[in-house]
Amino acid sequence: MNSTLLNKKETLSLHRPLGESLLRKLFSTWALVFIWIGMAIVASIISPVFLTTINITNILNQASILGILACAQFLVVLIGGFDLSVAAILALSSVIFASAVPVSTGLGMVLGCLAGAALGLLSGIAVTWGRVPPMIATLSVMGIARGMAFVVSEKSVAVPMAKLASYKFSFSVFSLPVLTWLIAAGVLYWMLNSLRFGRNLYAIGGNERAASLAGIGVRIHKILVYTLAGALSGLAGLMLVVRTSSGVPHVGQGWELDSIAAIVIGGARLFGGEGNILKAMMGVIIYQTIANVMNLASLDPFYQDIVKALVIIIVVGATVMRAEKV
Image (tube, rainbow, N blue to C red):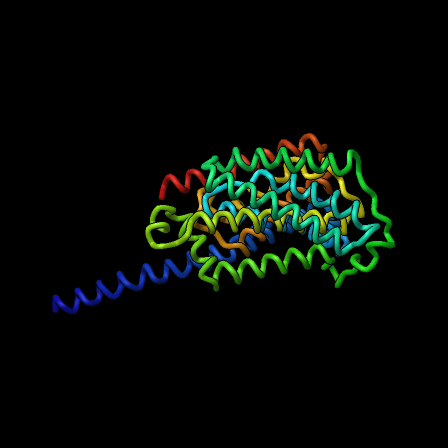
């Protein structure tokens, strides 16, 4: 009889954690979607315009540029670093592409992405071989990229609409920048979950020393990540030109912090080793929705900056507290 009671208790103890873990996993998977739905309900009350096709299209178009930058930032944060150069690289890529369009659109795209990849490579070498802290290394590269953008052009470079007409198509609410963002996020999801390279990045972010002892080439992986992040930042610059028909050397100031805030809202661990790229992209949509609602409510731009800064403090602070509990 005692053994029977013991078996029942063991069965209950096994089933309770399983059920709790399933509920926790379900909530974790859909929590961000539920949060956005709640925000959409409140936003539609504040402004009936919110759920219109035009406004949803506007949110996605604005989120697409930040989303591509967030893809780049996610990779670097995943291995325990930061990349403060993503927005400056975007600006450099935009003026390179816009300046080259009259000669060759394809050449401009290649040069924009190559410039981003080269600066990302520089960051990776500085962090690995130079042993420079990621924040300092990428801050320096940010200065280089922003300076180079002004060397290419001291003012905005307008692109004739006719030159980009073939790139300004859309399927319903999905323009080329939005499709590019979704494809980039999908490719990264596949890479991080299906390839050994992706699994190695999680291992490096979780415990760099253990990953090195396990035979993972930490340096080469980090260099590749920073290079890829630079190329993605360059791609974001191309899409910005496609969307706005101009390259601007001073564009994107502060967007590097927005990209960090967005992926942290999406559940990325600020100290590496944890995160889901799709959830991070949902974080981008939530962050952009906050900005959109403030615009619809006609909130003063200065107050919008204050709200965004508070969001960054809250989400980063919450991440630090969660890490300390672990």
